[in-house]
Length: 392
Image (tube, rainbow, N blue to C red; front, side, top):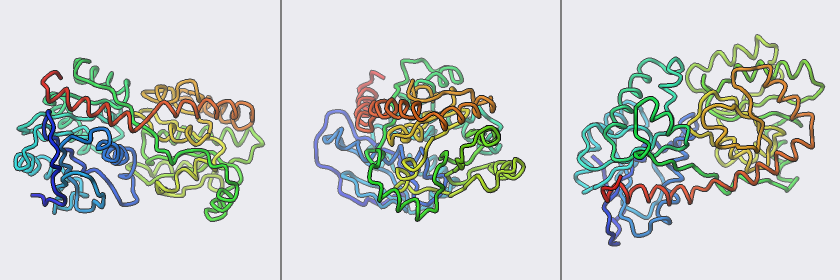
């Protein structure tokens, strides 16, 4: 059971007590700090400004250090462990919800408790376990497929973070479109062009960065399609005089070993740099230091890194797959994720054409302004109110 860490709000409201499961907020420098954790964090950071009169209880893990203007229930269990978290979500969370008088639970990442006494809103981040089943360990695949299907069927309303994900919900689980609301994630104000040359020069020196480089950031896992990127980069180096290195930033996920092997097999050992996990506070500097950002993923629920890169004024090349065209629009180069030659050609084109880079930088900056965490929070509050009113 949990422990209250802040007093409940005394404000009155007319639509119900809402609980938010924030146990997937991550603090360790690992792949768990990627898009899912950032979605939950930004929801909490913007929610209370979007709905100052709402009565919220946020359920957090024992590592949480956030100070929120609402009631918090902290678990004493080590829910940083996935299996402990699943036990808490399915067995203990329903009891805590009843004790707190929760009338609606928002489960921000795919799964809600199977036995839920109140209404439920579930955010579906992606259905990669359905689209790319071989990219998951069997036990992870079974859990995601089984529990997400049950959650989707039983939820009062669903939030999808892209139209592509909403389409996947309809295709795989036969969810009627009227049960789904699309709310796009946003981009933080920290992601912007950095014009101060002294700041960038100091950062390059501290990180020992090459003068010119192509940048990727994300969890190193199969669906990021890094093997195709490495083949394309090898072609680019053979056919171009450009001296760009390739920086693959991010923490290792599952099945990442073939990426390391491919670097050696392609003779790229001195040209590919692995800086490991990149803290959020440093990400804007990395984007700004890069000449080009690449994101060859074969499947994304949304794809925050291309959006952040565009907001920093970096031209992007992304896959023309799943949600990525929704994010980039006409502000970047879109390439078939299964065509290494086309990726190599796109790298050569963008790295050697300063005018094209400048044009895509301008388009990207304008495109990034269309996505807002504030709007995402407002639209999420609207979903809560609709679900509680019985109109969902």
